[in-house]
Image 1: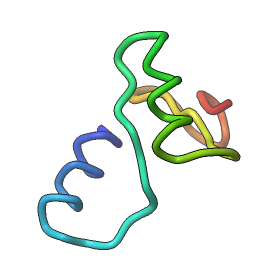
Image 2 (image 1 turned 90 degrees about the vertical axis):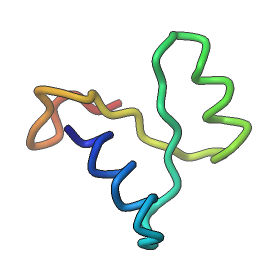
Image 3 (image 1 turned 90 degrees about the horizontal axis):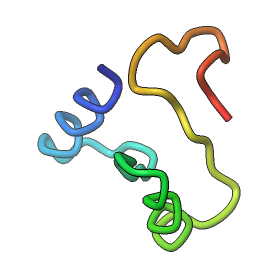
Length: 54
């Protein structure tokens, strides 16, 4: 759900924090290249109160 919201806000030209959609384990390299350090990886479903984040 979080990804759908981020995509919606992006399409509406709303200013949000940069993000990268990760679908494969190796996509993390793309995230580092685009966003840099530090960054947070969040699960797309089931995360709450800090759970599902690294």
